[in-house]
Amino acid sequence: MALLSDVGHQTLHQLSQASMTSIAKHLPTRYKTAPTKAQEPLIPSPDTFGQLESPAPPATPAPDPSPLLPTVAECAVHLELLETFYVLRQRILKSETLDTVFDLKENPREVTRRDGTKLRLKDTTLWTRREQKWHKYLELAVVRFLAWWKSAPCATAATRNSHPTFLEERLPPLDVIMVWHAALLNPATFKSRYRDSRGYKLHFPWRAIHQAIDHGPWTYQLRAEASQAFKKVTGLEADLFAQLESWASLPTPARTALTTFTVGTHHDSTLNVLTQGSAAHHLLQCVQTADSTLALGLREAIIRQTSFVDKMNAHLWIRSPALGGTLRRARSRYDNFLQLIRRHPTTMMVPTLDIDLVWHTHQCSAAEYRTAMLTLAGKFVNHDDSIVKSTLSGGFARTTALFRVHFAAEYPICGCWDCEALLSALVGEGRQREGDAGEDDNDDAQQPALDTVVEKVAADVAYHRAVELARRAKKPLPVRERA
Ligand SMILES: [Zn+2]
Image (cartoon, rainbow, N blue to C red; front, top):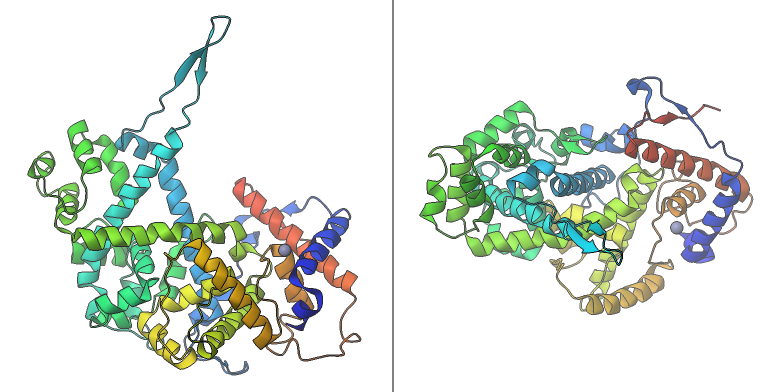
């Protein structure tokens, strides 16, 4: 990290932006497109997830200095999962079928111009009103999570080193994962509520989640046996989104009943308009009998996570040319962050976004997190995502100061693709392992010319941007000519 203390992250950001803008002029603006789907680039690279595929420790690489921390591969799957949450929310907000289910219509307003002609104005409230679909989806998701949690995973415990085949075969649906994830991110509450359940010991099923996610469109597909297992233990449909859309064909009273109930309230009249024994009827029964305080608390926990999901989507590290480097550095910075907590137990440490990602990943395996914290941070560290902004900014300033003192490195990072890719290139990511990157004090002779490095990085970043733009435009992805 010597680089950061030498140059300063702001300077680095400006340097990378300026250099890349000048170099970008010389880069080819068009790439060839992949002739077939099979020839399209894989971003993120499957290599990133190598550690998931072989749970046994690999034979050759240097020993991991911190086996108690989540792996880079797990953090990468976490990014995939957050992107999948992001896309799910967008799909729900934009679904016109669900607009029908919730009776959401555009209310155009007409204004009369001075000359007497009429002008139709677009309804600007529709987008806000569409949020209610998401809130109802979350309410149902919470109820489904509670039904699932009572049954399946708690029956068996799995740890990181035993193959968590139980959850691989019986991975729950995406909405249930989302609730479980939000619950885990309030570790103190989760511990007090579930510590005695065997489900507390579960290692989060990163590998199975990775396999369920299609990282092109960020969709989530359960295996048939997992869907069946979920139906069997909960009596609920596996795909909540599809179930909600299917309500569009129900008669109006049934639709109104389904979209206006709230958790924990009993209205027999609501149930009466639904066919006895139908999937919708059973779902509403679960809603009516759910613990409303718990359910609404969990729903709020997911809503609080929305801004983190949005930030991860905005940074889009999962598609960045520096993904591996960003996560390795984040993991090492998280390790430093925990050391700060250990050395300053009464100071509230506030994480940066990259450290927060590793921290969240860690919390997803509750029992392992607890053990690791006692060892690494010297105490159980709660993660409270409801702290007000002003408190956080004071804490952030103190953390920044302490980080400089203890590690002689800048604490905040920019996080943009350009800075991250340049940083990876300059610290020799791939050639050197993290941690020893800043050891050389007099390394002018060993460093390649900055221009050469910047040129390569600019080409990498430009290409990755072109791929992402093509993906968003639903066009065939560009390929790079091999030099
Ligand atoms: Zn930057």
